[in-house]
Length: 141
Image (cartoon, rainbow, N blue to C red; front, side, top):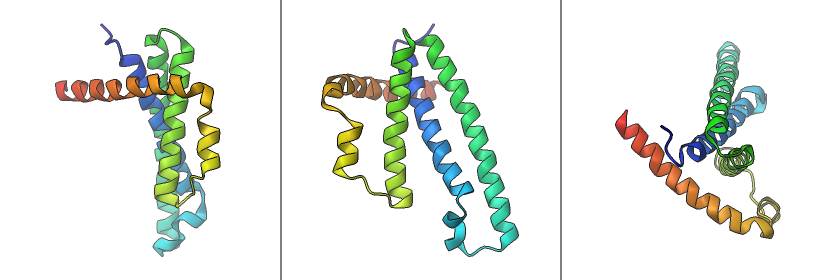
């Protein structure tokens, strides 16, 4: 039996996995990201290969979780919207925290158009409920 918000929780988790995959890919594929570590070239190559492998693993996990979310969701649009929102927000926060990227007012205005604010408020409430569900599921495990 599926919990009422399990599809939403899985959609959000798949968006989080997609954002983490993008973050790891940027670290592994952008040679400039690892230069400050001052490692020997063979070590840098090994780290980059490991990060690319982790990117592939995260993508596989994301696709699996997203497919499950689609199967449990009442409609595909809800799962896609939650996935995209989680990916967008996580990517923005991770980009600012890890790479020092700016989150300008223009970016925020473009990311959250006024006509979608009511829907985003509803999604935020579902997100919070989904987090509670994930915590409960982890406690059971």
